[in-house]
Length: 404
Image (cartoon, rainbow, N blue to C red):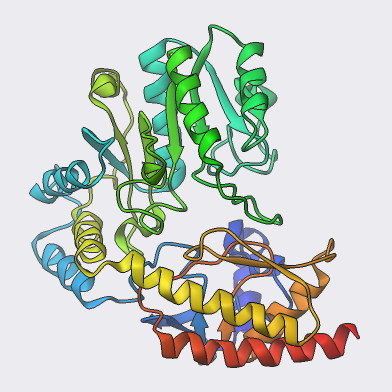
């Protein structure tokens, strides 16, 4: 079965043939839509083509596809049961692990997607404060519920009426946004760094992080870190812990269980009572297999210093791409943490150069993305990155011949 045949079949039974952020129609022309399998830092599409994977399933795969320790934990739990009349003991064990690992966590609640977690965190903040307004950076992605989806289709203006936007990394802008709704701020929600699609990434300025914490304290509002995308790739303790900034609430998902579906909200003791008042649930939120996978993933990252491994591989990739771009006469910007990298071409406003280059990378067995940040995994070895750099070098050469 070819990718084209599957797309044709899907077009008859799925709206548009595909939807959401995995819709290959949005990418460069050669990107496959359907995949057969993954192993380590590689994926194979349905036509058998092999790729060194720098998207890691858009973030969830942090240890490498089908990591033995995670799969063994998931299989053991599956043999006992998954979706039962109540959670298994693994829920308590996972919550205890999060509380032991994350300094700002005194409790944990579980769900399935990052959107679940960000929405649930804001519900806790509103329950705690009795207020409605949320301060959010302009252009930030916090999920796909009506209050935060990038597309307004199917939503109403009222569903976004309680959002007040500010400019990321501008404390002046954040203060001004708060002043417009003084006395009614329930939460400040912020990503650990600016990772908006189609734009160069921007690391947080420590003064901004500390200022956001101070402002939340002054307002009596909750500081919510959306660590869905960055969590467990920057610091196991939380992405702002290196700056000495601890949130009141943190949303987690993606890398939490190495590809198994789970999300969490962690919070401080001060918000434990308000969290108890929520009616927030789902039939599959308490399934035990993903919880077992999450516990194994976090323990493996801890025991093997997986983040350091990703940093080494990410640094090797960044340095290699810099040298290649220079040798082929391109000026590029490489932004974000090395564990969550992205490359853009200077002056490429319509992304035509990035689209051509990423398509060429794909033909040479390297899967990355032209307008969304990439992800490293602990499975990327020095040899894997070196092999990938052979493909990216050919792609730079082809792109130079294409653009002149």
